[in-house]
Amino acid sequence: MAKKILVIEDDKDIRDTIVYVLEEEKYEVVASDSARILKKLHEINPDLILLDNWLTDWRSDASGQEISKGLKGDPATNHIPVVIISAVNNIEEITKAGNADGYLKKPFDLTELIAIVKKHAVVE
Image 1 (spheres, one colour):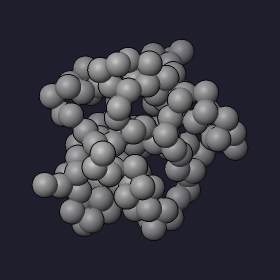
Image 2 (tube, helix red, strand yellow):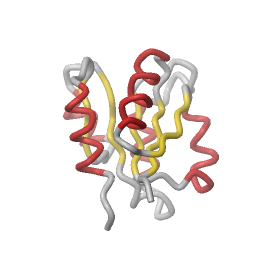
Image 3 (cartoon, rainbow, N blue to C red):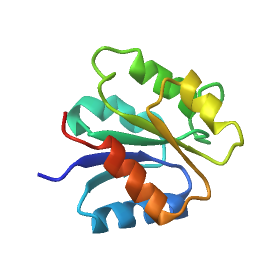
């Protein structure tokens, strides 16, 4: 059974590229341009969440870091690996502060994308 990856990225080109690459790698991908899809998280039941750190249509005070921290602080979702995607220079600090499992720095190489997904979307 294919691993399910939830991609939350508001840049259409980046989102489409991630979806294409992961589907070519035989992952099942659910993609959204906003964090509102997290309201359906229990229905989606992803094996990994790839989360953009700056979502333009989310609340102005909530970043991917804060969303990740909320997911990791909730016993119902803390088992789901979260990888933050961002172009900021302090992405390692953001990842730690958000209790995320990893990060992918933009611009990223497609082999980096595949490697981080393989690292985190594993059977426990």
